[in-house]
Every structure is written in C-alpha cells, then in structure tokens.
Length: 132
Length: 482
Image (cartoon, rainbow over the protein chains, first blue to last red):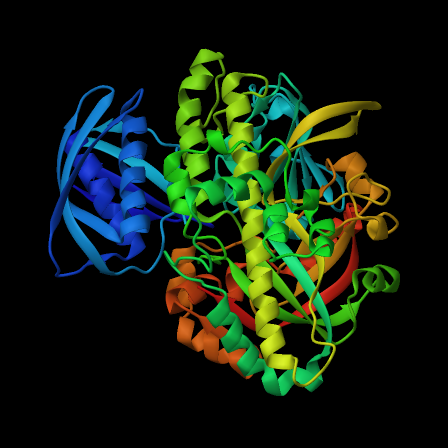
C-alpha cells in the first residue's frame, strides 16, 4: 500500500496502490493529505460519516475525495482514520480526524482525467490528477 | 506525439491532421513556433488536444495557443467551438476555475514619484485583498444575496457601491452573463462561495502592480489610458470554491449523460452533453452563475485595490485614481457567432486558458474600443513582464476570436519547489526592485519565473500569427499572492 507523486506541468498527480478497493480509497485520501501538506493538530478528535453513490468505482473515489476537500476547505478538518464499505454503486464512510494545524496548499478539486482503477498482481492501483 | 505528426503551415502555425488518429472529428491548429513546440512536446498537451477533437458537434479546428501546457482532459491554452444548439458543452473544456481571468487598472501615477511609497502600497494591498489557502473574503453574504451575485455579477457590485458604470462598460459581457441560473448551482457550491467573495485565493492567483515599460501602439495605449512609466494593477483570480464545485458537480453528473446520449470519449474529464439537453442547459445556467461570481469577485478586489491606492497616494497627488482598462475571462464557454467556411455559424466557444480577443468593430465592445479592438491582458510570470494586446480581424477568422492567456508553465510545481527556494526567490526579486508580499514561500517557489515559458516569445508568436497586436509591455514592481 502506498503512493508516489507523478510529474504534472501545472497541477498535482499521484499514483496510488493497495491490496483492495477500500484500502485504495484510504490510501488515496492519505495521498491527498500529503500533497496538501496537511498536519492534523493535537486537539479533540471527531468522527463523521457519509454515503456517496456513483455509477462505478472511479466515480465513488472522486465523490469520496471531493467530500474530504469540502471538509478541508469549509471546516479546516482533515481525516486520517477510515472504515469504508464499498459496494458496486455505493460507498459508506466512517472517518475520524481533527482540525489541521497547518496546510501548505489547497487541493481544489479531484479530476476524472485518465482515472481508471486497474488490477495489478498485488491488488489495485489508480492515477489521480488534482486541480490545485 | 512527436513533431513528425505535425504539418507545418508557416513559421507560427502548425496542424495535427485528422488522419493522425481515427477518432479525430476535426484537425488541431497550433499557433506556435518551432522553438516553443519543442518545449510543448515535453508534456502531454498535444495528446490532450487530439483528445479534445473527439467532442461531438465540433466545427473548424481545435485551436491551441503558444502558452499551451498539459491540463486534465482539455489542454490549457485550448479553444474549441461546438455548433449551437445540438453540439455539446463540456465542463472540463472550460475548467474548474470558471471565469478565472484578469482585470487591468491603470493610473497617471509616475513610478519614480511613487517609488518611496511602494512598500506601503504593497503592504496595504496585502492587507485589503484577502489571499491564501482557505481564506475568507472581504465580504460575507447570505444565501439570498449570493443568488443576486450569481444572477447579476458586476451589476450587483454596481448596485451596492463597489463599482462604477465605467467599470462595467470595460468588462467582458459588462461583467454579467445573461442566462445565469442560481437554482442550478448546488447548495454545496454556494456554501463554498458565500464566504469567499472578495478574496484572491492562492496558487497562481495574484495582484500585481506594474509600470508601463514600453508602448508599441500609441493610439491604442492612449485610448486605454496607459501612460509610459505610470503604474497599473493586474488582478488575476476567478470563482474560487464556488466555481470549482460547479465544475465538480457537473463533471460528476455528465458521467451518466454521456451514456444516455451515446457519446464515447477517450478521457472521462471531457464528459459533455448536448447544449439543448436538460443536462446541458442546467450546466450552462450554473456556469454563467459561477462566471458572474468571478466578475463580482474581481470587482470587489478592484475596490480594495483602489482603497489601498487612495490611502497611499491621495495625500500626495490629486491624480491617484485607478481607472479600468478591461477585465477578461480565460476559462469560459460563450455562445458566439463566427464565420466558418464562409457562413455565419452560432457556436459555443470553449476557452480554457485562452482569452477572447475580438477585433475592431466587433459587437459587445465599448464604443471607445470599437476602433482599436478588444484589450487582451497577458500576465507573464512573476518578475518578468506582462503584456497588453488588442484583438484583430485575424483572430476573428482564424481562432474563434481568441488569443493566448499567459506565459504557460513548463515545469511541474514539485520540480519548481525542489529547484527554487521561496525565500531566496523573494530576496532576488526584491533586489530587482519588486516588492513581494506572499503568504507561502513554497507557493512562491512554485510560481518562479523559471517554471514558465518566455512570455515575450509567446506574445511575439500571437503577434506574428496576426491574432493579436502589441499595445504595451508592463514590468512588475509589486506582487501580492497567497
């Protein structure tokens, strides 16, 4: 499980890999936090849950990360612990996190550019391009 | 994609013919020199331009400008026109930052007489124009008032004392797109936007104080009120979180629309719907609303910039006022009529990182600009130069009335941060007489001049190609960014 940044001329892009789909989603969230330079503060932890729907796994991934962007921008909240239930067209999320102590950059949107979750010999991987 | 795929037409025009790939509906026309092309070939922008040619309803060519670079789906620096009303509209071909654009204000304040005040001016601009990651704007509005902003754009600002009639007259579309529909903007987008009105944001957004360094067209410069050695102000920003959410919402929604309308695309970010479909109409209403938010946003920032100028200079000179030169968008979808193969055709012109550049006599220009053409503002990288051009008759016949929008990146943000230290860059710029007020040193490093193409070369290309004419070159004296 992991991620690495890929060169992109104007925006930010990561390749993420994991053993299964829920782990891929969690690792994608960690990758996005890392790109934004988010450091979660030592204040009170809080829990949130939500559900998103979409026609396929890629749409669920975009919807999931978009929800996290909303929390970051509106509430200065970031999350680092996740319990996910992924069905074919629905994703249930329970997450835990806190106010961030600092952030270097705003991730403004998740794009669908070249997004395709691919099976590999050790699990699944995806490339995500973010608008910054 | 390599240079062998391209056909050279002349020194500043190339073409990727439709036989290059089986799914191309129209060719790609590039306004670029060989030297700039060699930079462009280092990223995936040409492949993205070819992908863009698969959109249904395209007419003419997909056009790319000399400042082009890799985006996501549609290349930055791209222009594509689809036939109205059955052709498609594509949110990804307009961009997340709907109506990101530039406003240029000018003054009669001579730099040498103002040099001693530049530190004060930079500090006041930084104070009055909120910038940075997640920062709120100068004004918080409730949802009812936000709907008025979305519907009316700069007209809302005029009604509330933040604008003059002259400001609106010298704004693209008078700062207010007809057909904006706030009901098609999601609650989430409105939540993101309602506290950000009058804010700059971060990334490549900035306010810059420049000096008119060189005038190339006296008549046009006089008409615009650009005077040699006098101060000007550029404001570069867009629709903030609201626009981003509108695009996110509709790119998501159009994932189903393409299946419904049987549209097959090589990149999901290019999703689209026919303009006359319910989905297409909904997006157009939302996009226009977001564009109006951006016009109002730049108007509020102009109001704040004028406040900074007044506080700095009013006690020292009577001539401190900032007048508007023009305000242009470079991420937008507009319904326009253009001549294609000798016929007048109504189209939706998608411009993503490209500027409208209407020629002399065009409808929609204020009366004083009818003779010279529409001003085109080209911000360069920090520390280099910016340009003011005008649109030409050539742009109307060859590029859907469009020109380039900036210098265009050549280096990724990560690489720029590794190669450049923000504090050293700030020091170097200050030593060159450019005052810097920046909220983030890594953010400053990402915008280093070395990360961008040579803006003089980009402008020379559009000028040689005949799609814009040079009016004035500006040099920076203060940069404010988040």
